Length: 352
Image 1: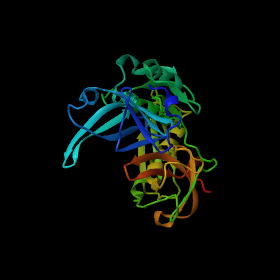
Image 2 (image 1 turned 90 degrees about the horizontal axis):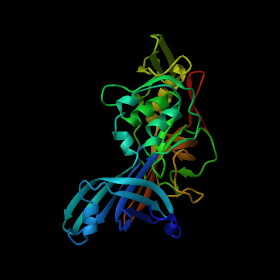
Image 3 (image 1 turned 90 degrees about the vertical axis):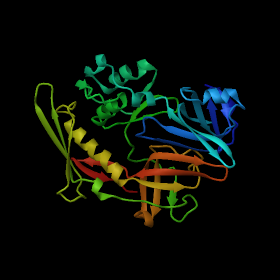
Image 4 (image 1 turned 120 degrees about the vertical axis):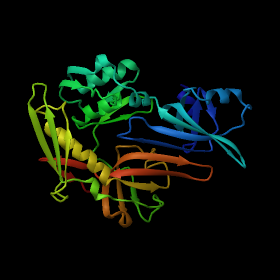
């Protein structure tokens, strides 16, 4: 990786893409990350003349798997690998659109080795370190990993990857899984309170354009979770959203859960689906919050936008952020969710 000190004097809005140790000129691009995104990604469009720069031709050809880093101003935001490219010929020239995914994409795509498909008497941190840290992916827990699992067994259907396995286990401990800027794996809970990093409003200087779709069919009144323990005991738990008609219900299995964790598994399932249903994309006119910091997931903002069904000022958690740039425009989109919590098995949404 290049020495980060060389970027410390970069203008804060400047995007720098380092490919295989060399800086590339970038005309257009986007970068997205979030509290529940295990493999952040970015793409970049680069002007290209085949044969003019043999190094570039080699670094971006199929099968190069070239390493890269993306900086916004002086800040490293992602360490990624080149996986896809799209060559385009237009009247004004030829370009390559390069698509990068965090190195943690290996965990998203790779299955669990058979010898590690069943892990006993280990907590989530121990399991993550076995599957991630020993393979070069550092592990960080911002919240407790919770109690050990009696048995944590990977699904033997050939489709459960390392990431899906870890996300499934993390859900039973109320944790989200994401990736940091250096390709480490991060486990954390969504915050429910804190000092807002910005206030965004329609109409206002911070926000730009608006469009939102809300689908209440994504929500349920009751979230049932069932589990069959190693000794054959059947366990059940229920979490409830009082704001949804009682006739809507959904059932999940959580066979890694035991009697102590089955209720938490039901509540996390409810939180996860409710976050999907209640999220709203909020475009903003700059990449930085009121403190001059890049927008970051798992921070608090206050928002007001009647056209987005936010008639009064309300506190939201930033779930995901997407940055986009071109020669003439620089925008960001915040995916916001209410700070949800569960009390007595029932969903509650925080307010300002």
